[in-house]
Image (cartoon, rainbow, N blue to C red):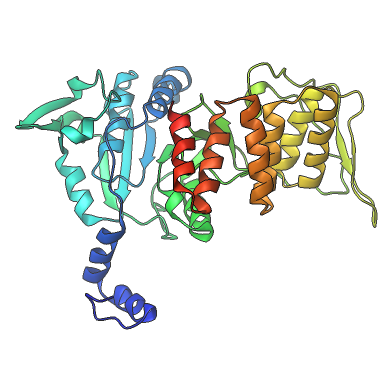
Length: 384
């Protein structure tokens, strides 16, 4: 405001709307362009596994489409392209689109030249064949890889964000949502959901995992990948209509832990409600594990009261399980009860000290109340 001689927030906003040059300068002051190749490792390892096992370009006859936003100086989209090549895909069998709100960073991304700091740690180990020397201490991404990545300027808040492109099979949006408030996060996620086809993979960062109980996604991949799969839009059940339960495998339960058996498909659970009477949950001949799986399904549909009741039944008839407490924490957070959510997440960690999603949610809660040291400790445990 001092540099533009703006006397109020409103005056500054008006200037930014009418002056592209001032908007660009303002953006550069706000961005955190920190990135490096194969950052965090696990998401790229899971992407490679998924491509090898799930994606058959010769059978599908179409190219794998990946979106990576924001791109910073290009390290992440180029890492994705290298991962796909190492997974066995050839140029022409995939395309990576990427973008950023910063014109300056897009220029760096297109130049594709990087100093040693972009290769920190061991994340990029074994990928030297994708680079060539550019100058002393600087490496350049090889031309064949650069040709598979396309950059454009974009803004996650724009309602027309990548609307001119067909749906993508994979979307990376990591370590940016944590900087947004609730309304901005919701808008960005809606744009990204629109860009991702049903069944596609969504990768987020450990600090900005998807809003809890987002029924558009189900967790996928190993701990540390922070990958979600988009599923068909769920039909929210009427409280007056029975909710039949189909069989679920362990992979259908987000945040599941080893040792939780698959639910039986022979014991339907229904939720009924009558006018003026509280909803009742019936779980005739149900097993404890089926109770928990059905609780997850109801929670995904937003039927929190009944889902909490099923969690309570589960905890009464079986030894405490981290998944039950994690689900209770998610529902508490979704209902605006952060202290209650934190209590459930801590119980989750008591039972499973390496539960990555509970650690990530505790980090977010700590950060929101201003305890950055606690947030850093929880995040360090995620990476351990």
